[in-house]
Image (tube, rainbow, N blue to C red):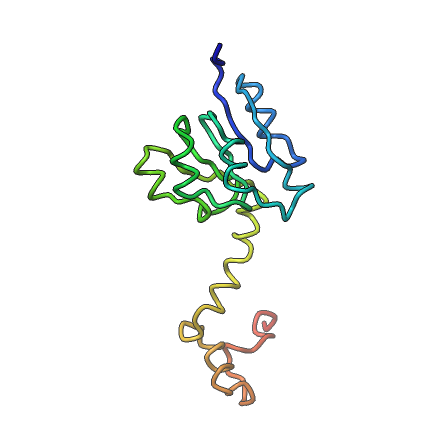
Length: 159
């Protein structure tokens, strides 16, 4: 007899079981693959991944495998592919869309906070042409001249 609960495959579960716990509370049937913590460099063979996903309705894909057309075509019950990190570049979204499979990501705070923290500095390295006046002076080699009032570090403490 087929299960009435939604079947969810986690291809790379982690030691943090928050997602698993929430899915179990929602009465989902879980299929767990090889832990990303214990098998960091492990890559599923195509047939092994298809067998793991089997008749699951949802796949929580780890970042270590590519979910391409051959995988998506071979899992007719698949309704959604979810990544628990930033980006979904390891899923063939075009093929999934054609097959009516929803693709989304659900990044954890550790993922998006790390990106948010790095973004301001990365945007500065992106294009020196957009640099502020002080940075342009530095890039043009004018940092050895007499400072102007705007680049005086003590200006805030002057009375």
